[in-house]
Image (cartoon, rainbow, N blue to C red; front, side, top):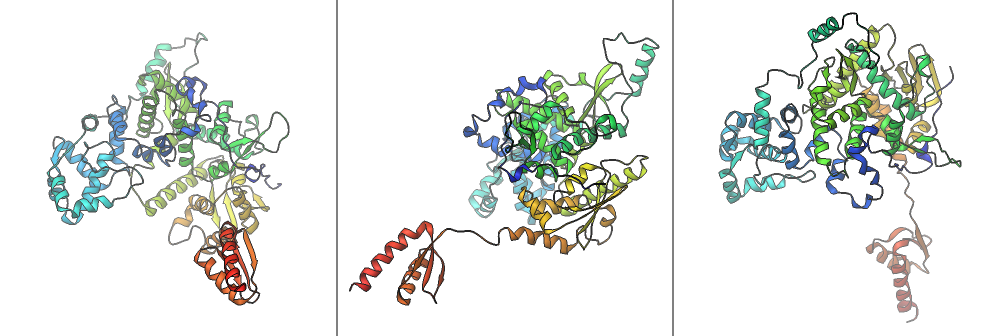
Amino acid sequence: MPAPSKRKRAGEASSTTSKVGRSSVDSSASSAAKPATQAASESTKIDPQEELLSKSTSLFEYLERLPPGTLRSIYKLPPPGGPTVAAAVLRSSSLTDIARQCALRLVACGGKFKVGSIVEGWIHRHGQRDALLALRRLESMGILEPLGLANRPGQGNDDIDDEANDSEKRAKLMAKIACLTPEFKGAMRLHLSTMSSSPWPTISKEQIEEFKKSRGDAKSDGGEKESRDPPAPYELELYTQSSWDSVLHFLVGSDEAGRDKGGIEEPPEVMIHFLTRIGLMQEDPDYNGSDAPLVITSKGYEFMLRDTNAQVWQFVLQYLNSMAHHNMKDAIRMEALSFLICLGSCRVGEGYFNSVLGSKSARILMKDFARFGLLFVCRVAGKKAFYPTRVAVNLVASNEKEGGRQADALGQSVVATRSLEESLSSPVPSRSHLAVVVQTNFQVVAYTTSKLHISTLALFCDVESYRRLPNVIFFHITRNSIRSAFRLGVKADQILRFLHVHAHPMLRNGDHQLVPSNVTDQILLWDRERRRVVMDEVWAHQCRDPSEFAAVGLYASDLDALAWGNAHTNKLYVHFGKSEMVHAYIRKWRTKHYNS
C-alpha cells in the first residue's frame, strides 16, 4: 500500500488568520448569535472578561472565570438547571476538599456560621490557612456571600497570609458571618431532596411499548418521520465517532472513501464554515484563482494532537464565544452552560423527549450540540427525543474530581484499556481504536485501522518509513520529521502527550515507560535546536589600539550593548539598537586622547 500523503501545510506559508463566518454552527441559531459576525470589526474593543473566558481549557475553568454574580444567576435557574449546576460545581476540581466540606455543612446548618467557628472549630489548627483559601474559593464561585476574600484568576494568595498574620485583620475576619448565597442554598436543597439521579424524566420501556400498542399496525400518514427503537450504545458510539471523523478527516485531507464505500463523508457546510471561523482551516494563501481551496492551519495541526475531550471543548468554547456580542449573551450563555452540565449528569443510553427543554433557545442548543456529536436526535415513541453520547457525559465527568498526574494517568489507562477491549470484542475493527508502542530505536508501532490516525502520526513521523499490516502500521521518528512538525507549529510537549495518551494499555501495567526516555530526551533536544542560535543585528567597530578597545568595550558592557569582542584584532561588535550611543562615546574618547 502506498505511503500516506500529507495535505498541504498552510502553516509553512503564512500565519493563521481565522475568518468570521456564521455566528453558530446551525443556521437556525443565527438569531441567537448574529452579532458575532461583527467580531472582526470590533476586535480592537475586546472585553477583558471575554478574553479571559476564551482562554479556558475546560468547562469548569470557564465557570471559575465567570463573575460570582453570573454564577449566582445560574444557580437560580429553575430545575433541573440550577440544582444540577450547583451539585456539579461542588463535585468539581474548582473546590478543594475542605471547601466541599464547609459548603455541605453550611447547607445542613441553616446556611450561616461564624467564620471563627469554621476556621478554628471545623478545621485542624494546622490547616487554618487552607480553611481561609477554601472560603475564598467558595466566595469566588458564588457560593458564599462576599467576605472580602475573593480574588480573580491570575491573582496570588499572599494576601491570605497577611490576613492570617495581621492580628487586627484576623480578628475582624473571624467575627464575620459566613453565609451561603440564597441561590446556591436553594439549589443544593432541591438537589439533595430529589430522588432521581437524572436531570430529566427518562424515556421508559413502558412508554415505548404503550406507543407501539396504540399505533398497532397503522401506517404512517407520511407527514411525520417514522418512530424508531432507542439507539443501542454501540450505535451512539458509532454516531459520535462518525461525527468527529468527518471533521478530522476533512482537516487532514484524508483520501478515505465516501460513505457509499463505507468511508467517511464530508462534514456539513455549516461545520466547514465553523472550522474556518475558529482558525482551524483557511483559504490557501498560495492559490491564485478566485475559489481558493481550504487548507489546514498551524492551529489545526495542534488541534489534531489533542485528546477527544479537549477537541470537543474547543468547539463548545468557540460556540460560547460566538455569543460575545449578543445583547442577551448572558442569558444564552447561562442556558448553554446549564444544558451542558445537565448532559454530564445523564447516563449513556438513556433518552429524553425534547419537551423537557422548556425554551426555544434550549431546543436550538440541542440541534447545535447534535452537530458536535454530543447528542443523538431521533423520533422515539412518536416524539422527538435526544440521547446524550459518551462525549457529552465525559465533557463534565472528566473534570469533576481534582486529580494530579496519577489520576490523569489512571484515567488515560482506563480509556485506552476500554478502547482496546471494545476493538478486540467487535467483529469489525473499530476506526476509533489507536494503541501506540514507541520503541527505543525510534520505531512507532500503532495498532489501528484508521487512515485518520495514519495521517495524524504522519505529522511527526517519517512518511517514507511507513509500512502496514492488516491491523498495525509502522513508522520511524526522525530528526527531519520532528523538525517538519515544528515548522507547522506543533510543539514537542504536544507530540509527547499524544504518544502518552494513546500508549498501548499493556505499557501501563507495571513500571513500563510509556515513551522510552531516550526518545523523549531526543525530541526535546531537537526542539531546543531551534533556539540554539539567535540572530542579532550588530554594528562592527575596529579600534585603533588596545587602550581604545578596553575603554570602548567597558563602556559598551556597562551600557549592556556589547555583543562580542576580539582582543587579538581589537574589534568590537555592538548591538545595533545602541550603536549610536557607543559611536558618540568613541568620538569623545578619540578627541580627548588622540588630539591632546
